[in-house]
Amino acid sequence: MTERKKVLLRLDPAVHDALSRWAGDELRSTNAQIEFLLRRALGEAGRLPKAAGPMRGPGRPRRDARPDDENDRDGDHGE
Image (cartoon, rainbow, N blue to C red; front, side, top):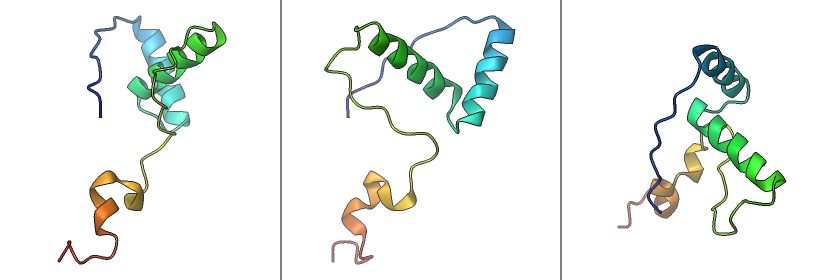
């Protein structure tokens, strides 16, 4: 997996609160909501890079879909 960029973002507190509530309504973190909105805006402007990987859907990943468990579905731990 490629390393993610870290960005410091200063927001008006009221904007942050509204964004946080919106993110919660859609089962996303505030960070994921910001990325979702940025990707949507880039796509609408025709500026989303083709090299940008897909974004994970809202909510927590299912337990059986986590990469750590993919090779251990039968519970034998590779033995």
